[in-house]
Image (cartoon, rainbow, N blue to C red; front, top):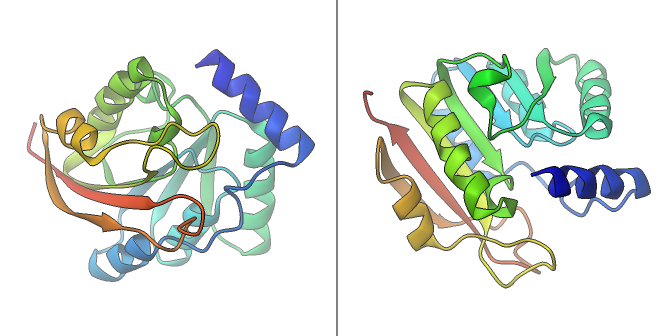
Length: 195
């Protein structure tokens, strides 16, 4: 994980952030229309677009990233939008030990898991499960393998395998709002089973 943290710090420093500036994922918009507002956590929140969107729709939001520069930008964007978001520097593979809270009703990942190593993915699933409320929804948007240089991506079969214990897949499919022109992107919507 240390290499990725250093890489993302460097990419933000030089201003190479092709993951920024995309519209809010269509599946997130749809989910927000369907669910009553509650506590949400945005994993790998970057400059905060999804976090701000959720806050503007009544959610109590914690945005998590491990790089300071995007968190600073997210705080500024949230202030300009008059949106209340708790942006926290934390590692998604250590959420239960980082003081981000727990009992989240909605967990959002717009391109975090798909960039993690196999070992970090194991820890990610454990930590997401630890901070989820019973019946929480988990929305993951992830590139498929073979797209953008430097992003591993994740296959649907791997998603099924990694989330088979403790989570029920409600729906999945293409997410065209993010980077479809260069990298096919899927969404996966899960519900937490009672632990």
